[in-house]
Length: 491
Image 1: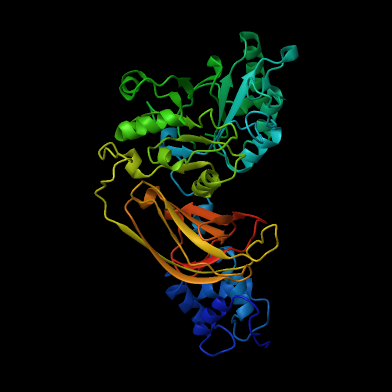
Image 2: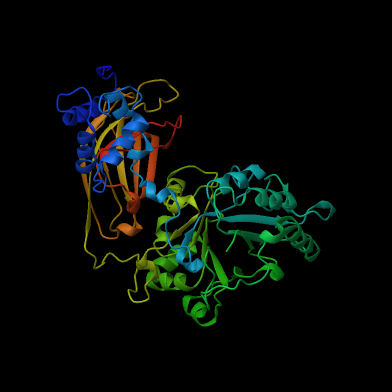
């Protein structure tokens, strides 16, 4: 049998391996099973599970089916040990509730690849959004030459693409990564003649995938569930609108008395913020019955984004972001919608759907038993270098994004001049009142001065998708170089 060599990297994992190897060269099935039970909290794991891990990750021939350190390291750096619960990488939620019961991945100005003054419009932007699981696309439609409607950001220098090409692209890619409905949010500025052309393209190009008649569904008096076959729903052109007719928002009481279930409202972020602060519980109640779409203010010329969390906390289903603009808001969006198999639909928690709670997300008083998150940030591996090529002075910031009273962040200390294998061994604890509304973000930063730091990489996931146990990997994360190596921590 080939003996395990001293590790050239990941000393912290080797120390853990040695604890369970108990002086032997390899981990036996029994020792690995003890590790799974005690450290990974996989209490249902049995010897068959341990043997299957050895078969998958051990490439050396060992005696009596055991695991060398190299096999153990491969296992520890695999998706098996990802902090994201792998059961949530498939659709596991109830998909038979009305559309109002879900957060729906929503893009703003989907056609743009840059800013909204001189940026390029591109069909690739639609492909990219759909491949991220986006289920609500925006199409700004204007009269074009030769009776061909065009898509661009009106009255600006953004480039133009043909409406028919956009619809063709949507038809080709709508259901590549998700089988659930796509909503087309058509911002219609076209003449009646070119609207007729748009309708013809929608029908002829999308064919049977275009929803043109009400569905026979069991949720009578409500919107249908995501769970119909693959369909595309148009949100403009009155003859084609079935479930998402846009109406002007006047007040919550007006909507309660006059709005139909198939009508939805769109409002700019600043107006939505005012409503949230003035009457948060009314906003939540409104979103139990109707779809609401929030979009960035027109003053965001660079296509920047607002933080979406506060609108998810109010139950808004269609929180629209500029998918082409990386940063914290899109990190949070990607984190939320990797849940439920990345299908673009995430079931809202019960606190947002209960008609008895009268939940107000802006209140600081929530009569809920606290949940305690205890974790230890252990180490990093192969962090991407900055353009200067100089080794990083990295630290890790752990952020909780949820209701205001839950939102907070804590930092590890800084490790000097170490991009390859920084080690922090920092314990952190968080008290959380509404974990079902929380996202956890792990962000690596480079300390560039006493009070300054620069972004290196991040990983975000829903609190409810955290896998219990220790230690684990933060998996793939957004950052310079798109490193596949990340953070190890106990949680």
